[in-house]
Length: 89
Image (cartoon, rainbow, N blue to C red; front, side):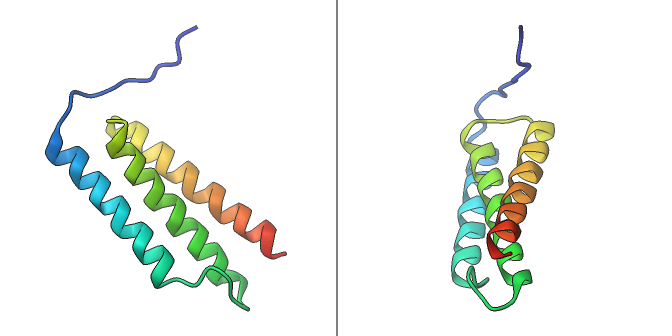
């Protein structure tokens, strides 16, 4: 059974840019958007931003194709936002 994971050739500009955008997003998520707040929307927004940033960062590390990067980023963002919502309620 084949998993269908494709790797692109190493492109330092693309991979480096994805990594740096991911790190910048993680910094914004941790420093700007409050993780624990009295408002549930803040925690969900933090989870979404953190997941999206992590997805972009990991897409650069693992040289994902554009389609894989998009799907993994959305999956991480939605998953962490839902887990933040469940944790808050």
